[in-house]
Length: 273
Image (tube, rainbow, N blue to C red; front, side, top):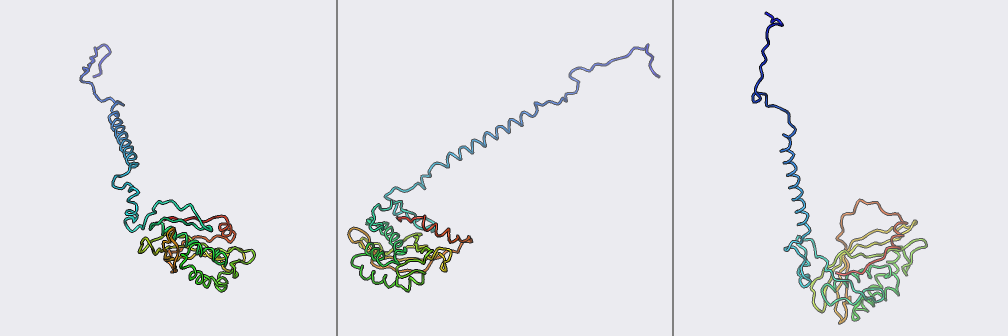
């Protein structure tokens, strides 16, 4: 039965302790944010320590002193002999480096520079060829080397390269003959003599729009026998063998104009072991 408005109403008040304790509170996320902050700081510290240690030299792999360079020249894992770090010679004779040290490295430096001279375009000109051979040859072997090279650079040989008997290219074309040493190794070194092999890449041909013998590359190995003459390493004999040649790169060939410009603008180097 419904209560009349005249009947008294009863109101119940719950104690504070009995009220529902669930209240959304943004402060509950603070422990999670604190943990993430700590992780970020730790990660940054680890990265900083790693970068700092990377710049420090490992005492087990530090560069050997100069006295031990010869023993350490052979790199592990078949990587081949490392460069010696010796400075190239500063003296020349007829444009060819000379005055090489009386060492195995000095002999290899001499062989590399002599290979460049033997493979140059100047060898196709009689007077220039005689000057080159007289500069690099052992005086005792000069006559034999001169005769052999005169036969090797005959008019027939020049014709195969597209030049005349004095190495002159047809009008409008540039004759290219360059030898670039890739590396050297010695065999049977002694204070008196040594045999040095020079692995080379060569550029040969006629550069120009009407060339029928475009510039191409060739890989070969020159073996040079050198003798210490008392003041320098000099050539007594040499031989040439093909290769080893790498797989040709998939690269677009330069135009005749680009090759001509490169040959005329880019000079060569002096080589040191």
